[in-house]
Image 1 (cartoon, rainbow, N blue to C red):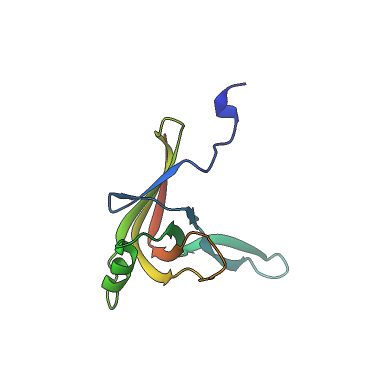
Image 2 (image 1 turned 120 degrees about the vertical axis):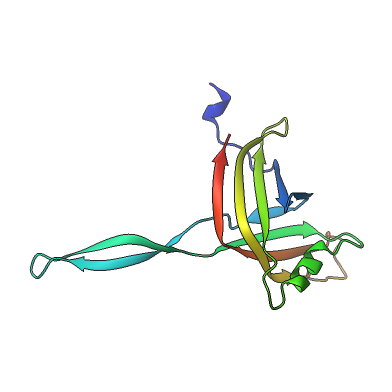
Amino acid sequence: MEKQNYPLPIYRYKVAIDGVAMDFQSVSGLETSFKTIEYKVGGAPNSHTTRIAGQQDAININLKKGIFQKDSFLYDWLKTCKGSADGKDVTVSLLDAAGIPLITWNVRNAFPTKLSAPGFDGSSNEVAIEEMTLVADSMEVNFA
């Protein structure tokens, strides 16, 4: 069977924020949804309900990454958004084995709404992971 008949693995990806490549442990929330508008068509007794897509819902993305000494990019970005949204474009690309993008999600005008520190546990030897939630205006998906 040809390789294209198999689903793509999710562990090879890259993320860039305003063109700056960054390493993240995980990315989630790349989804688009719309509010549903319902209205009745016709009069009784022959009326029926019709539904159409309405306004697009906000896109909420979650990024998780290990914390490195003196790497305050996410915190600094969050601080700049107080009182005004410092929107940045975010791209997430699913890669093939050679590192070439197969599918890219282009997220426009994303800004942070939440930054979570890791939970601390003196009996653990896990890596410290921070999590950031972004809200964005739109998303476009490009297939190679």
